[in-house]
Amino acid sequence: MKSFASSLFVAALLILPSPMLAEGENTYLIHASEEQLKGIQEQFGPALTDYEEVPLLEMELSDSEKADLEKKFSSAEIYPNREYEVAADVAPTSFTITKSTPAESTPYTGKGVRVAVLDTGVDTEHPDLVVKGGICTAEECAPGISYDDNFGHGTHVAGIISGKKNSSGIIGMAPNVELYAIKAMDREGIGTTAQVTEGVKWAIQNDIDILNLSISISVYDRPLELMLQEAYKQGMLIVSAAGNEGGAAGEDTITYPGKFPSVIAVGAVNNNLTREANSSVGPAMEIAAPGTGIYSSYPIELDIWDAKNDGFVSLTGTSMAAPHITGVLALYKEQHPALANVKLREILQSTVRDLGTAGRDQTFGYGLVQYTKAVSGVPFVETTVSKGRIQMIMKNKALASGWSVSSGDNLVPQVEDGKWIAYRTKGTHVFNATYTNAKGVKVTEPLTVRVALPAFPDVTPANWFGPHISYLFSNNMMSGYSDGSFKPYKEITRGEAMILLGRAQGWDGTKQSTQFPDVGPANSASGYIQSAYELGIVSGFSNGSFKPYQSVTRAEMAMLLHNTYEFSYDASKPMPFSDVTKTMAAYDSIHAITQQGITTGINSTSFGPNQFMNRYSFAVFLARAESPVLFK
Image (spheres, rainbow, N blue to C red):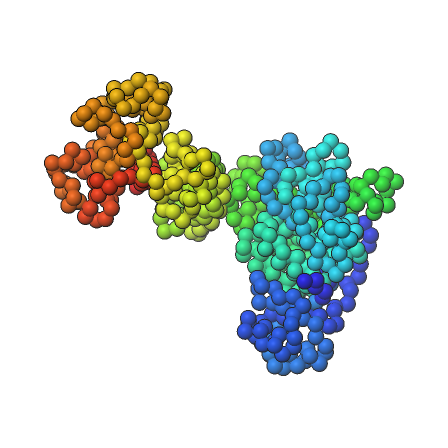
């Protein structure tokens, strides 16, 4: 739904900053309980916009209706629909200052990171930009592609972040991000509270990782704060221009949304690393970046500021500083995709070059942004994923103690000090890293890990046996069928069992003649069966056959595993299963694998020795035999 209400301005200094526009007279943002909002709509008509993520409505009210609403719903919060402006800017600068040139950031380019520029739109036809999608929430959308840029500011911001490498023009700090345009500001660089808030809502709904807000307003705006709080809570990183209001020491001229705690406020420095003259100051200042004379993309039809008319101009201001931070965060996000937004923000703060007063100050925040691959200032868990294998390593251990990683209610076992391995099938998996930091504070941080393979449609993260299947898949021991499925409940044959066990043990699987008349050299399991026979692991049936196409029983599986892995066990301990007797050939083997924790039986008193194994239960037995540390 198109919204119109309080306005923000883009933050750049190509032209002088526009004066604050008057607040909307008839459009308001109302924050109240869900029940109250329902009652308000029943009495005062439907909302222009219903923000489902937070209890917030945009409504058009006359003066008398507003007074009546205030009287009948006294606890409801009614806010004007304010106007924001783009943060005025001017800027060409090298990423050398921030140590984020392609030579320094390679191999990271922001690949896979979803970045949205909420601004005047982005020029979708600019040769240096690739816009994957977007939305227009402004009152006046562009013809054709609604989020196209007819002002210029958003295109310039986008180029700093993601100008593509194409041997011409400029290259952005993170050229391979997935760029999205949220056009919330019109051709004058003006947008309202409702339009900007609706843009943030779209970013939440579309899983944006980093949101760039090179916009500015000088007054507190509660409705926008609510939506940004929700975005941050859901894991988004939010970067904003600190504003171009200037100011002297001791003053607080930082504008909103940069002033909100959920937002990273960015100040601007010039090439001499002193404050850009118009950069705001104040306690909310978090970090500084180049913002003077930044050279970046611009719509060619609007490029009238120099004699070249080539689609590139220089702008100055905190609007240009903010996308430097967005670009650096995109590099960190690609490098450390499992880390939460709070941890990435901490890393950003820890890798700065201190400017001005030692420590955090009101002019440069923590300091000048510096990208580094080797983060050393904070403890964190580095995560890598390959074919379902998730490796987690505690970095900067000298700054932490008492570390652990858990999955749900279960601890993930350490394979080495400060190193964990887990296996998962396709899906999003959340782990929790817990440690005590250098200040003695116990910290728990989420690790969100996305696994692409193995991707079996019939094995989901909800299946408890999934990690075992992933382990065998990752180690090239077990795979699926040609149709992509795994068929976890399909019975497994004796021949198939020998193939899987042989792969795990590295036996010679070359097809060959065997000891068994029913296993010819053309049989895919022949090499593994003959190898197992020569190793004394299998002997076949009394009639000399092997029966490769007969399903494996649980007792046979116990014998195969025990003969292969030669488990130790205490024979004096009682057998827990009433259906397993000493007269059975598999008695010792069942005793051994039970004590090894490979199985607990089909229930507490029964092993089910004659039941056939299916593919998932075989995978569980084999994975536990192969890696008891991971699966006990």
